[in-house]
Length: 141
Image (cartoon, rainbow, N blue to C red; front, side, top):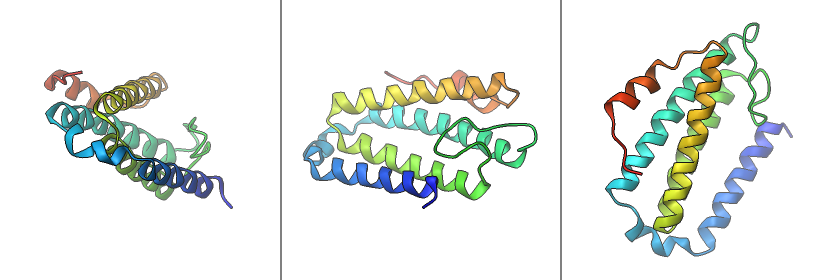
């Protein structure tokens, strides 16, 4: 089995385990405007990383991917499936967690994604979209 398929199965199993352990009871009261704002911020950073990773995939002679799940030279289809899964999985987990845990989850991953984007930028990939949103949006944390 390919590493990408294994990691996708592991991710789906993790989400399933979270779903059956009970935090769903908190879902109705945990999502508010701040949660939405943080999730949008995460999605903006994820989108930028997604675009940078597609550039890496299109230029294997110039760039190397450092995400071990995708491997050094992923195909565009693998990149697209991975990031679509990340977007859906992240929002689902944020929705299911209690409010405090959801806030920690979201802000942690916003920080991780921002770091990845900056590292990619240092290696010659564009970060224009993120800079634009950093200026235009004020996200409550």
